[in-house]
Image (cartoon, rainbow, N blue to C red; front, side, top):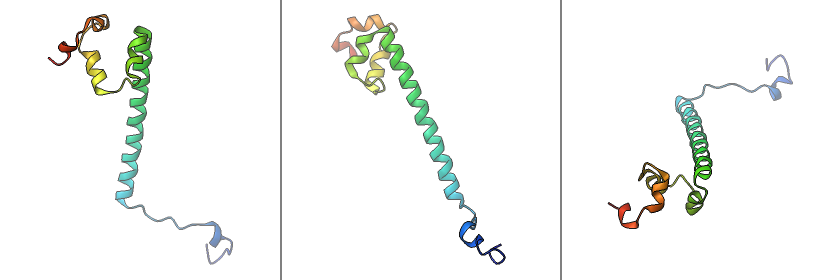
Length: 92
C-alpha cells in the first residue's frame, strides 16, 4: 500500500516476526508477574489472619514473609503455645 497511498508510509508499520527468544522471555516475564502477585495476595491474607488472631505477633517483625518468622510460627501447632516458648528451644 505504500506505493498507492502516500500517507500509508507514515501510518503503517511493517510487522516483523518476533524471535522465539523474545516470545519466551515475554512468557517468563508474565509468569513471574503472576507469581509475584500470588505471593503478595498470600502474604496479605496471612498478615490479616495473623493480625486477627494475635495482633501483637505480627507487630514484632513487621513483615510476615521472612523465613525465620514463618519457621517460628510453624514451631508449634497452636499459636498460644508460642507465648510460652523459650529461646533455647528454638534452635533444637
